[in-house]
Image 1 (cartoon, one colour):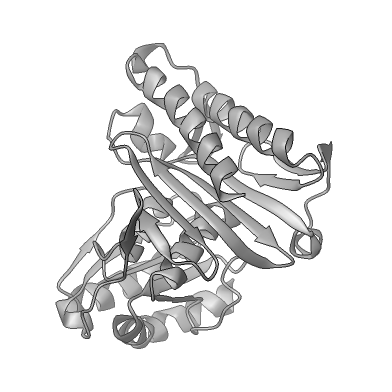
Image 2: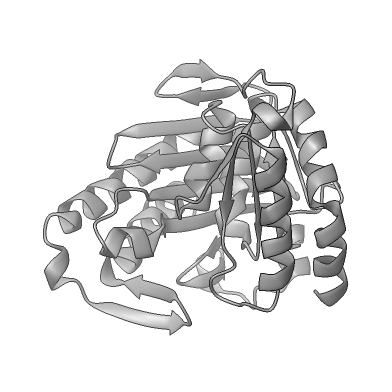
Length: 276
């Protein structure tokens, strides 16, 4: 299954790389405030789904642009239906679309397979750098076939932390800014690169020590979550619990830094949870 997902990601990557050579001709649409989609997103997603369903025609799909399908047919996409699916591919065909349309080379393809509610296969592919992050449950995490592990840093004040702004909906902006202030004061630095899937892959590879964000969707998280756990890290919602995929709250990191992150985020995250 992982090999098929890798083939799908590389096929989508070729589409994205070709389009990146002539960004001025792109057709861009606005889905909602600060949330864009291009013809490249759609073409990438179509290529991924076609590759996956050719190999596994009975599998379900949860994809950012085309929504939900079950065995190739439209499904209503209720959360309980997604969680109950035997096999469901969770796809972001171009995470970091805003970066892509500006020529800012920080974006990726994210493909995860969830089986009976558990993510078992993961691929995050950065076509700009030709970096392929992969994981299978119980088999470790890899970058271009080299085993990766989360960082060994034990203290948040030594850690580099990734984040993402709540750019679509600003309901939690005040809570987020309080969290950002706390993490900035207690860490070695904070970075916002604009592609959550890659940020999670970077945590798995030890390039970032932790990551947090509000308002992420399952397709932003699924593949990266498995990469992190297979690389020895921890991931959860702002209380540290495991129901993060659908909660729109995410914190991840190496084990000891993860604990420090929960403490740093707790005062403001209580407000976010109450208002959410």
